[in-house]
Image (tube, rainbow, N blue to C red; front, top):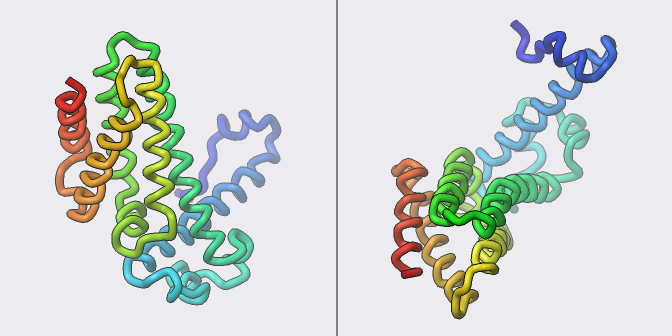
Length: 208
Protein backbone atom coordinates (compact mmCIF):
# COMPACT_ATOMS: atom_id res chain seq x y z
CA UNK A 1 0.00 0.00 0.00
CA UNK A 2 1.27 3.47 -0.87
CA UNK A 3 2.56 5.61 2.01
CA UNK A 4 0.58 8.45 0.44
CA UNK A 5 -2.82 6.69 0.73
CA UNK A 6 -5.57 9.11 1.69
CA UNK A 7 -8.96 7.80 2.75
CA UNK A 8 -12.40 9.14 1.87
CA UNK A 9 -12.68 11.02 5.16
CA UNK A 10 -9.54 12.97 4.32
CA UNK A 11 -11.09 14.01 1.03
CA UNK A 12 -14.39 15.06 2.55
CA UNK A 13 -12.64 17.37 5.00
CA UNK A 14 -11.48 19.35 2.02
CA UNK A 15 -14.88 19.30 0.39
CA UNK A 16 -14.34 18.14 -3.17
CA UNK A 17 -13.29 14.82 -4.59
CA UNK A 18 -10.60 16.26 -6.87
CA UNK A 19 -8.81 17.59 -3.80
CA UNK A 20 -7.25 14.12 -3.61
CA UNK A 21 -4.58 15.28 -6.04
CA UNK A 22 -3.81 18.35 -3.96
CA UNK A 23 -3.60 16.33 -0.78
CA UNK A 24 -1.39 13.76 -2.43
CA UNK A 25 1.01 16.44 -3.67
CA UNK A 26 1.16 18.02 -0.22
CA UNK A 27 1.92 14.65 1.37
CA UNK A 28 4.73 14.00 -1.11
CA UNK A 29 6.16 17.50 -0.61
CA UNK A 30 6.08 17.19 3.16
CA UNK A 31 7.82 13.82 3.01
CA UNK A 32 10.53 15.24 0.73
CA UNK A 33 11.08 18.22 3.02
CA UNK A 34 11.32 15.96 6.07
CA UNK A 35 13.85 13.78 4.24
CA UNK A 36 16.03 16.80 3.42
CA UNK A 37 15.89 17.99 7.04
CA UNK A 38 16.79 14.55 8.42
CA UNK A 39 19.75 14.12 6.07
CA UNK A 40 20.96 17.62 6.89
CA UNK A 41 20.91 16.87 10.63
CA UNK A 42 22.75 13.60 9.95
CA UNK A 43 25.46 15.56 8.13
CA UNK A 44 25.68 18.02 11.03
CA UNK A 45 26.50 15.13 13.33
CA UNK A 46 29.68 14.57 11.32
CA UNK A 47 30.59 17.89 9.69
CA UNK A 48 30.67 21.48 10.82
CA UNK A 49 27.98 23.62 9.23
CA UNK A 50 30.43 25.66 7.17
CA UNK A 51 31.75 22.45 5.58
CA UNK A 52 28.35 21.19 4.47
CA UNK A 53 27.42 21.92 0.86
CA UNK A 54 24.16 21.70 -1.06
CA UNK A 55 25.75 18.92 -3.09
CA UNK A 56 26.36 16.88 0.07
CA UNK A 57 22.76 17.35 1.22
CA UNK A 58 21.40 16.35 -2.20
CA UNK A 59 23.58 13.26 -2.36
CA UNK A 60 22.48 12.12 1.09
CA UNK A 61 18.81 12.74 0.31
CA UNK A 62 19.16 11.35 -3.23
CA UNK A 63 17.58 14.40 -4.80
CA UNK A 64 18.74 16.91 -7.39
CA UNK A 65 19.62 20.52 -6.67
CA UNK A 66 16.43 21.88 -8.21
CA UNK A 67 14.41 19.80 -5.75
CA UNK A 68 16.38 21.21 -2.83
CA UNK A 69 15.89 24.79 -4.04
CA UNK A 70 12.16 24.22 -4.43
CA UNK A 71 12.04 23.91 -0.62
CA UNK A 72 14.89 26.06 0.69
CA UNK A 73 16.82 29.11 -0.50
CA UNK A 74 20.14 27.75 0.76
CA UNK A 75 21.62 25.82 3.68
CA UNK A 76 21.25 28.87 5.95
CA UNK A 77 17.54 28.98 5.24
CA UNK A 78 17.31 25.25 5.97
CA UNK A 79 19.06 25.63 9.32
CA UNK A 80 17.07 28.72 10.34
CA UNK A 81 13.75 27.09 9.52
CA UNK A 82 14.66 23.93 11.40
CA UNK A 83 15.60 25.94 14.48
CA UNK A 84 12.49 28.12 14.27
CA UNK A 85 10.28 25.06 13.84
CA UNK A 86 11.60 23.18 16.86
CA UNK A 87 11.73 26.20 19.15
CA UNK A 88 8.21 27.18 18.13
CA UNK A 89 6.91 23.64 18.72
CA UNK A 90 8.63 23.44 22.10
CA UNK A 91 7.41 26.88 23.14
CA UNK A 92 3.83 26.04 22.21
CA UNK A 93 4.06 22.76 24.10
CA UNK A 94 5.26 24.21 27.40
CA UNK A 95 3.89 27.77 27.39
CA UNK A 96 0.25 26.74 27.80
CA UNK A 97 1.14 24.61 30.81
CA UNK A 98 3.38 27.32 32.26
CA UNK A 99 0.57 29.86 32.04
CA UNK A 100 -1.88 27.36 33.53
CA UNK A 101 0.26 26.84 36.61
CA UNK A 102 -0.74 30.31 37.81
CA UNK A 103 -4.44 29.53 37.41
CA UNK A 104 -4.46 26.24 39.30
CA UNK A 105 -4.21 25.57 43.01
CA UNK A 106 -2.19 22.40 42.44
CA UNK A 107 0.87 24.07 40.97
CA UNK A 108 3.15 21.19 41.83
CA UNK A 109 1.27 18.74 39.63
CA UNK A 110 1.30 21.12 36.66
CA UNK A 111 4.97 21.91 37.25
CA UNK A 112 5.73 18.20 37.03
CA UNK A 113 3.71 17.91 33.80
CA UNK A 114 5.54 20.96 32.40
CA UNK A 115 8.93 19.32 32.96
CA UNK A 116 7.81 15.94 31.64
CA UNK A 117 6.55 17.51 28.41
CA UNK A 118 9.76 19.51 28.05
CA UNK A 119 12.05 16.51 28.44
CA UNK A 120 9.83 14.27 26.33
CA UNK A 121 10.11 16.72 23.42
CA UNK A 122 13.89 16.96 23.83
CA UNK A 123 14.07 13.16 23.88
CA UNK A 124 11.93 12.72 20.76
CA UNK A 125 14.20 15.15 18.90
CA UNK A 126 17.43 14.32 20.71
CA UNK A 127 19.55 14.09 17.54
CA UNK A 128 18.55 17.63 16.56
CA UNK A 129 19.14 19.13 20.01
CA UNK A 130 22.35 17.24 20.73
CA UNK A 131 23.81 18.18 17.36
CA UNK A 132 22.97 21.88 17.58
CA UNK A 133 23.80 22.24 21.27
CA UNK A 134 26.85 20.02 21.68
CA UNK A 135 28.34 18.29 18.62
CA UNK A 136 28.45 21.29 16.28
CA UNK A 137 26.77 24.17 18.12
CA UNK A 138 24.71 26.48 15.93
CA UNK A 139 25.21 30.20 16.40
CA UNK A 140 22.95 31.59 19.16
CA UNK A 141 20.92 28.37 19.39
CA UNK A 142 21.68 27.76 23.07
CA UNK A 143 20.89 31.38 23.88
CA UNK A 144 17.55 31.13 22.08
CA UNK A 145 16.66 27.95 23.93
CA UNK A 146 17.63 29.44 27.29
CA UNK A 147 15.55 32.56 26.57
CA UNK A 148 12.56 30.42 25.63
CA UNK A 149 12.80 28.50 28.91
CA UNK A 150 13.36 31.69 30.91
CA UNK A 151 10.25 33.32 29.44
CA UNK A 152 8.15 30.32 30.44
CA UNK A 153 9.63 30.17 33.93
CA UNK A 154 8.73 33.82 34.40
CA UNK A 155 5.13 32.97 33.48
CA UNK A 156 5.17 30.42 36.27
CA UNK A 157 6.43 32.78 38.98
CA UNK A 158 4.88 36.09 37.89
CA UNK A 159 1.73 35.57 39.99
CA UNK A 160 3.45 33.69 42.78
CA UNK A 161 4.61 35.73 45.75
CA UNK A 162 8.33 35.14 45.63
CA UNK A 163 11.16 37.43 46.59
CA UNK A 164 13.87 37.95 43.99
CA UNK A 165 11.95 35.91 41.41
CA UNK A 166 14.36 36.69 38.57
CA UNK A 167 17.32 35.45 40.58
CA UNK A 168 15.44 32.26 41.41
CA UNK A 169 14.53 31.72 37.75
CA UNK A 170 18.08 32.25 36.53
CA UNK A 171 19.53 30.03 39.26
CA UNK A 172 17.02 27.26 38.53
CA UNK A 173 17.42 27.60 34.78
CA UNK A 174 21.20 27.39 35.01
CA UNK A 175 20.97 24.06 36.81
CA UNK A 176 18.29 22.74 34.49
CA UNK A 177 20.22 23.67 31.36
CA UNK A 178 23.28 21.94 32.77
CA UNK A 179 21.22 18.78 33.26
CA UNK A 180 19.84 19.02 29.71
CA UNK A 181 23.35 19.43 28.33
CA UNK A 182 24.75 16.49 30.34
CA UNK A 183 21.76 14.27 29.49
CA UNK A 184 22.03 14.91 25.76
CA UNK A 185 25.80 14.53 25.87
CA UNK A 186 25.29 11.04 27.30
CA UNK A 187 22.76 10.09 24.60
CA UNK A 188 19.75 10.39 26.92
CA UNK A 189 20.53 7.16 28.78
CA UNK A 190 17.90 7.89 31.42
CA UNK A 191 14.23 8.05 30.32
CA UNK A 192 12.80 11.58 30.01
CA UNK A 193 10.38 11.08 32.91
CA UNK A 194 13.27 10.17 35.21
CA UNK A 195 15.21 13.33 34.28
CA UNK A 196 12.06 15.44 34.63
CA UNK A 197 11.55 14.05 38.14
CA UNK A 198 15.16 14.82 39.11
CA UNK A 199 14.75 18.44 38.00
CA UNK A 200 11.34 18.72 39.67
CA UNK A 201 12.58 17.45 43.04
CA UNK A 202 15.52 19.84 42.97
CA UNK A 203 13.25 22.80 42.18
CA UNK A 204 11.00 21.87 45.12
CA UNK A 205 14.01 21.69 47.45
CA UNK A 206 15.29 25.06 46.23
CA UNK A 207 11.91 26.74 46.67
CA UNK A 208 11.27 25.58 50.25
